Amino acid sequence: MAWWREAKFGMFIHWGLYAVPAGVWQDKNYGGIGEWIMHDAKIPVADYKKLTAQFNPVQFDADAWVAVAKAAGMKYIVITAKHHDGFAMFDSKADPFNIVAATPFKRDPLKELAAACQKQGIKLGFYYSQDQDWTSPGGAAFGGHWDKAQDGDFSTYLHTKAIPQLKELLNNYQPAAPAVIWFDTPTKDMTPALAQEIVALLKQHPGLIWNNRLGGGDKGDTETPEQHIPPQGFPGRDWETCMTINNTWGFKKNDFNWKSTETLLRNLVDIVSKGGNYLLNVGPTAEGIIPQPEIDRLQAVGAWLKVNGEAIYDAHGSPFPKALPWGRVTQKDGRLYLHIFNWPADGKLVIPMTTQVKKAWLLSAPTTPLTSQSTEQGISIQLPPTAPDAIASVVALEIAGPVNPLPPPPLAQADDNSITLPADEAELLNSEHQPVTAKLEESSGKTNIGYWTDVHDYAQWKVDVKHPGTFNVAIDYASESSGEKNEFVLSINGQPVAHGVIASTGSWKKYTIINTEALTISQPGIVAITLKSGGPATKTFLNLRSITFTR
Image (cartoon, rainbow, N blue to C red; front, side, top):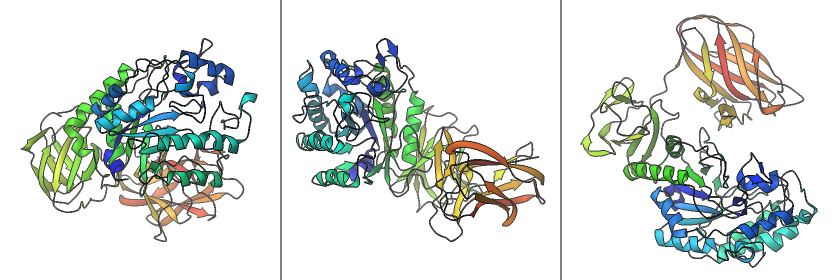
């Protein structure tokens, strides 16, 4: 995994026959992602295969594509060798439904990309839809088949098409590729026995990396959160967030909802600060052109990396348990890198640690030292009046020894006397001093505590209560539990003050609010508020977004 962990930033390319309809079928604009149009429009197999006559990407230039990735600061590329539509973007002898045998183009773009990547020093990986295949008899399809031509035996499909094509991908592009095999959308058809056949094939290629989407219980080498950044990353696991630049993976002619350079760049920083890689997608047209808005944004990210790449490549995640209010932190080789999103108005950047700083400087001005001093709040760095980069300016710190973070300050009571305990401000602990199963996750764009499967796990918040009194308490949660109901216990400074039942909301994503009995905080000062499960021990407790105290 060494090269992959150093790389941090890669290009995903979704390119295939679906670029011909480009989101439109029979004059209807389909709202889903571009590469799923055959599925969403329920296009018959015979009609979909006719699109091959229109697929002639004569403007495809492998060298130019790889140059775009390289200019963006990307270190590897993963391209769709076969997506769920079953169309192979390479010269496959295993099945004639491919770009060489079935289209006027008659060229193998993967071969050309492999040569271009080798020449320009970029790693190349192949995405392969091993499970879903909507044009091969027996291939899986989410929601079931819609055309009798799709019916057949999955094992036969796997052994006559998928596995032979995987062998072609693994053997025909050496030594340039593949460095990665990127599987997708496993279904129950991929049994452990079938998956192990594929794993045995992959293991014949030492150094090959594959992800966690093969199915059949295989965990692969990497976790693959899609279109979101996990709040805590995946401690102990290599992981890679894949994201689109607009709303689709495969090209759609009517999707102009481009993410800003600020969003893309800050996503990269956020991901690396949590120990992950960023696989950012482009969706070329049927002519073989990467849309210019995607190129423009990638070039802007690349320009930033030319100045600040030291803080990204081969960097490790932040030593601080939570994101800091002004930005993100990465680290390597005795240095901390402070990625400042919110430039402090008073010019003082505070890092909550006691570790001595030997030297400080902006990566954009390496010959100009910055002054630092120790304060009660941590190390204070004196910054210039204005940020050198409006999106993310990076301060490098050479430090004397390991980082010793200060404990986070307690939450403050609001001016209206309310107290809000958000999921992402909780300290997650275990009363038996065992590893905590509960962790932060995201659902519908909001953070919650999930995977709360150990009855001994609990969440704790420390709050600076200025105005004590009696409060109404609301718990924002979701639960799919049925049968015997979970109980909760709410405590203040170790003393239980409220308890109740966590009833099922019908889904882990369906949130509701329950109110506890009113409770009293009698004295001002720092108080510890905890939420624990009251049992039973065999059930997942809840998904928790927040607890709110109001007067």
